[in-house]
Image 1 (cartoon, rainbow, N blue to C red):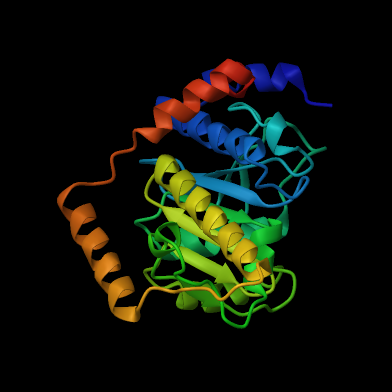
Image 2: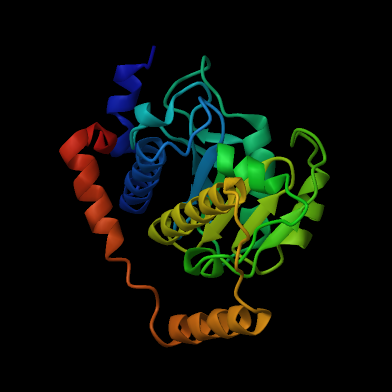
Length: 259
């Protein structure tokens, strides 16, 4: 059971920057649960605490995403050391999650948030020889996409170098025979990315299950679309109008994520 006394003191023990990051991160977990992009107690979302070096927030291992609150998150560093664990000794973090997420945070200083999923559609596409196809407008918005070959459960710290080398400067990655990963400079941007990535994978699976021939845009159209999006993003950073709407939705359903 959660130590409610310890959880109740977290807000007074952290900076305003960390508390805001905790709110954003808790919202991400609840949104992933709402949209059923979860794998029981597994998978992770991590968020870097701004202005405080390599300190990131991660879920306590053993909690469902729908249980996560701002106070329940664990603060760790990139070496996996627990800097603030409001649960005491009985609850820790999942080592495999630390290996994958610390790799991205350590290599990509432009990244604040990393989301990794094991959904049915994501796992299906990760196992397809054709990979992730630019078959819809939503899918094209996720390009360019990186790939990392499966090396077994992510418990080997040496895999981190290969993973970040494969990721490069991309923000969308297919982990072969495993699932999906996205990263972004903000929590809101990461949520929008994983929502689109997952929706596009589901559309690909649905289309492949249909008894009809698929039509794919030409490579030229795909490249032109990707370039147009890149230019538009450079001129005007993504307007994150969706984020306040998502938070309002969470509050209507269950505002306990703010605790």
